[in-house]
Image 1 (cartoon, rainbow, N blue to C red):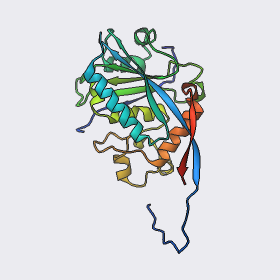
Image 2 (image 1 turned 90 degrees about the horizontal axis):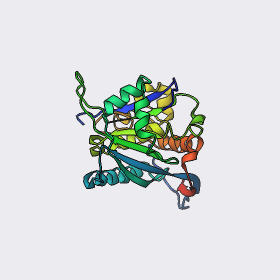
Image 3 (image 1 turned 60 degrees about the vertical axis):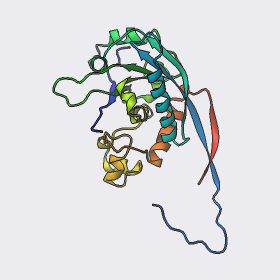
Image 4 (image 1 turned 30 degrees about the vertical axis):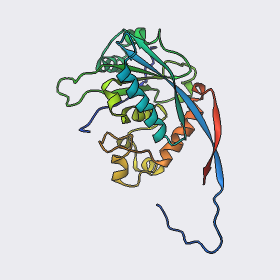
Length: 250
C-alpha cells in the first residue's frame, strides 16, 4: 500500500448486538415512472488463512450478499465475482493499526499480489478482542477523505475492505462497510443539516440506520440510497462494467 498520508479508515465494532394521506376524487391519479441509472458492482471475497474453500464461510458470504442486495433496494446491484483462498494469515486489529500508523508494507505484501482489479476486494481475516476493550474489531474500510476522484487513478489500492470471519455472522457488517465505501458516514459524524439532507428525522432513524452501531440497525434512508448511487456513479464508476436504466415510480 502506498504511503498516502491522508487516509480515513472507517470501522465497525460489534455491540450486544411521511406517509401523507391523499384523498382522491373520481379521477384516478397515475404516477409517472422515473428512470434511474443503476450500476452493478462486482465483489471478490478473499478467505485468508485458509487452504481450501470453507462451506460454512461460503454459506455466510452468500447470506451476506443476499442481504446486501436486499438492503440496497435495487439502487445498486452487487454480484459475486470470485471466491479465493490464501494461506497467509493475520489478525484484523493488527492490520488496522498498521494502516492507521502508515506502517503497512507488510499488509500490502499480503493482499497486493492476490487482489484483482475492477472489483471491490473484501479480505476476510480472524480477529481478537484487545485488552481493555469490550468488543472485537469486525471490519473497516480505508478511504480517501478528500480527492475521491483519485480512486480510479490509484485502483485497486482503495478498492479494499477488511472484515472478520466473525463479522460475517452479523450480516449488517458488510452492509455497513459498503456504506462507507460508497460515501456514507456514521450519524454522529454529521451535523444536523447533513442528517436532515440524508433523511434522519428522529433519534430512532439514527439508531436503526445501517451506519449506526446499534443492535437494531435494519435500514438505509431513501436519501442515503440515492447518495450512494450518485457517489458510486461519480467516484467508483471504474468498478462498473455495466449499468442499466431502471424505472421507479415517482
